[in-house]
Image 1 (cartoon, rainbow, N blue to C red):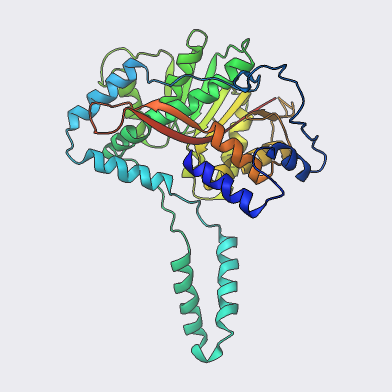
Image 2 (tube, rainbow, N blue to C red):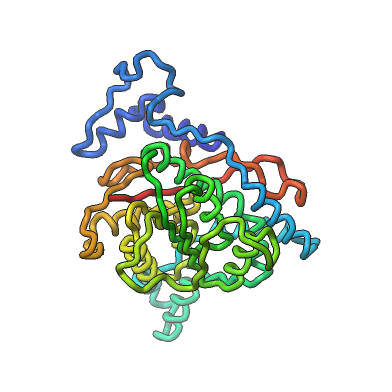
Length: 381
């Protein structure tokens, strides 16, 4: 909250004509064709702003007791003394992660560096030395993205670091769908990059009475095993808490197979290139029968991923001929035009933070509540 206030004060100082409080009107004027908002209108009919019809109230999200018990049992079994430090290190790494550089971007940077170095031709007597200097500078200024390979140990660390936050983020998206479309009763769900299975638990908490099939897709065998253990209370035997859950390492091939809800939570950022992300988004959209839910970290990189996915779906023609319905943005705002970055920043600050209790309060010296920053978009027909 303090960071948001500092940002607004800086914005007001640098752009005094824009203002801070009446920012909606000024921002609406930036985008051609967008209706200006009159903040002085009485559309609330003297009701307090907290009763604004656009506000979606969601109480503090708590992990299902069975899931929390299973996670605590698994962590107690390994008895890793350095677990808390590993959890913090992985959390920091995932939060600070950038997108991998594309070949075209690397080539553009290399040409820019070469042109800059050639301004001092005396420093580089040969072409070989010039090439070495360019490569050296490129390595120093380029983010070195690495693919994460989740072993059994790293999967447990990821569970301790992200289980509660992932559950809360997806729960927020599902809450939006349930509030705005209470008649929606899904029967099938597919989770791409399912990880610990938090999407399945969140969906079961909302639509457990109607969902009969949960398809969890993750290329990591260790993650699939961990998710199945969590369903069974932290053990390898016994009946799963949620019936109808299936695990696969690859997406279904048949274009005729669709799911009422398709989810990708914190998974697009794990793909190594823009081409891979585009292919996955197109495949997920073809698998979608009602809603496609995309969730990423509440960072600039995460926001960029979601906006690229949105544009690909809305502007592309990759929908199956079996289902030619046009798509639209169901949430956070039902628009198809590009939002100005500053407007999205305000929305991001106010809607992307949930107060959630930690999943494992007895295993670490953390405060009882934690902020889970995320960014999400829901696409539909």
